[in-house]
Length: 79
Image (cartoon, rainbow, N blue to C red; front, side, top):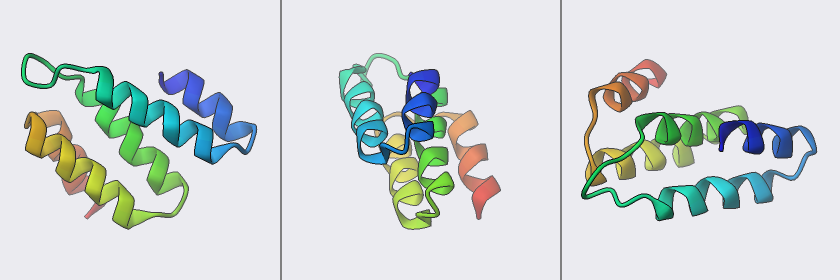
Protein backbone atom coordinates (compact mmCIF):
# COMPACT_ATOMS: atom_id res chain seq x y z
CA UNK A 1 0.00 0.00 0.00
CA UNK A 2 2.76 2.45 0.95
CA UNK A 3 4.65 2.01 -2.34
CA UNK A 4 1.44 2.35 -4.32
CA UNK A 5 0.52 5.58 -2.53
CA UNK A 6 4.01 7.04 -2.85
CA UNK A 7 3.93 6.41 -6.60
CA UNK A 8 0.53 8.08 -6.81
CA UNK A 9 1.88 11.04 -4.79
CA UNK A 10 4.80 11.37 -7.19
CA UNK A 11 2.27 11.50 -10.03
CA UNK A 12 0.67 14.45 -8.16
CA UNK A 13 -2.66 12.69 -7.68
CA UNK A 14 -2.98 13.29 -3.95
CA UNK A 15 -6.71 12.63 -3.91
CA UNK A 16 -6.15 9.14 -5.35
CA UNK A 17 -3.41 8.43 -2.76
CA UNK A 18 -5.79 9.50 -0.01
CA UNK A 19 -8.48 7.18 -1.41
CA UNK A 20 -6.08 4.22 -1.46
CA UNK A 21 -5.06 4.79 2.18
CA UNK A 22 -8.69 5.18 3.24
CA UNK A 23 -9.78 2.06 1.39
CA UNK A 24 -6.94 0.06 2.97
CA UNK A 25 -7.85 1.35 6.43
CA UNK A 26 -11.48 0.32 5.95
CA UNK A 27 -10.59 -3.21 4.77
CA UNK A 28 -8.75 -4.19 7.94
CA UNK A 29 -10.87 -5.84 10.67
CA UNK A 30 -9.48 -3.66 13.47
CA UNK A 31 -11.29 -5.50 16.24
CA UNK A 32 -9.21 -8.60 15.46
CA UNK A 33 -5.90 -7.08 14.36
CA UNK A 34 -4.47 -3.98 12.74
CA UNK A 35 -1.34 -2.80 10.98
CA UNK A 36 0.32 0.06 12.83
CA UNK A 37 2.51 0.81 9.83
CA UNK A 38 -0.53 1.48 7.66
CA UNK A 39 -1.80 4.12 10.07
CA UNK A 40 1.63 5.67 10.49
CA UNK A 41 2.14 5.85 6.72
CA UNK A 42 -1.35 7.28 6.27
CA UNK A 43 -0.62 10.04 8.82
CA UNK A 44 2.81 10.70 7.28
CA UNK A 45 1.09 11.17 3.92
CA UNK A 46 -0.85 14.07 5.40
CA UNK A 47 2.32 15.45 6.98
CA UNK A 48 3.98 15.42 3.55
CA UNK A 49 0.93 17.33 2.32
CA UNK A 50 1.46 19.84 5.19
CA UNK A 51 -1.87 18.95 6.78
CA UNK A 52 -1.15 18.44 10.48
CA UNK A 53 -4.85 18.44 11.42
CA UNK A 54 -5.66 15.46 9.19
CA UNK A 55 -2.52 13.63 10.36
CA UNK A 56 -3.68 14.05 13.96
CA UNK A 57 -7.14 12.76 13.06
CA UNK A 58 -5.65 9.65 11.45
CA UNK A 59 -3.56 8.96 14.55
CA UNK A 60 -6.57 9.55 16.80
CA UNK A 61 -8.73 7.24 14.72
CA UNK A 62 -6.06 4.55 14.83
CA UNK A 63 -5.59 4.80 18.57
CA UNK A 64 -9.36 4.73 19.07
CA UNK A 65 -9.80 1.58 16.98
CA UNK A 66 -6.83 -0.43 18.16
CA UNK A 67 -4.15 1.26 20.31
CA UNK A 68 -0.63 0.15 19.47
CA UNK A 69 2.54 1.38 21.09
CA UNK A 70 4.21 1.95 17.71
CA UNK A 71 1.41 4.31 16.67
CA UNK A 72 1.54 6.17 20.00
CA UNK A 73 5.28 6.73 19.51
CA UNK A 74 4.81 8.03 15.98
CA UNK A 75 2.05 10.37 17.15
CA UNK A 76 4.20 11.70 19.97
CA UNK A 77 7.08 12.31 17.57
CA UNK A 78 5.04 14.80 15.52
CA UNK A 79 3.94 16.80 18.56
